[in-house]
Image (cartoon, rainbow, N blue to C red; front, side, top):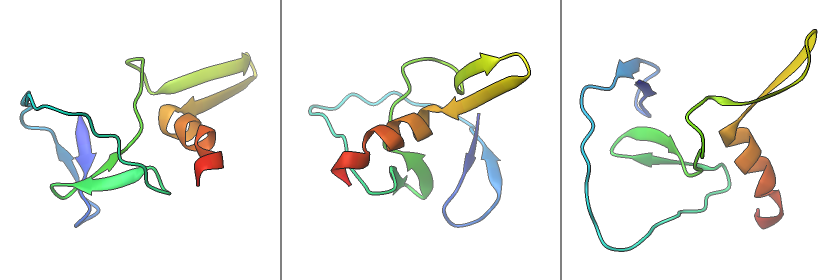
Length: 79
């Protein structure tokens, strides 16, 4: 995986992933659906499937919608 940091336009490769166990649950709600955590721009939305989004349509007319877009559109009434 790769990440785009908030301090530059440089894409960085993920070096290591750690698991952290903590009590409680956090689901920040922001107007953009994004926050910066430890200098990394991240989405506040989740993806239930391990893919880049949803594809639908007819063979010559294919639409791709990301999980971020679907969640952002669905949370429109709350903004």
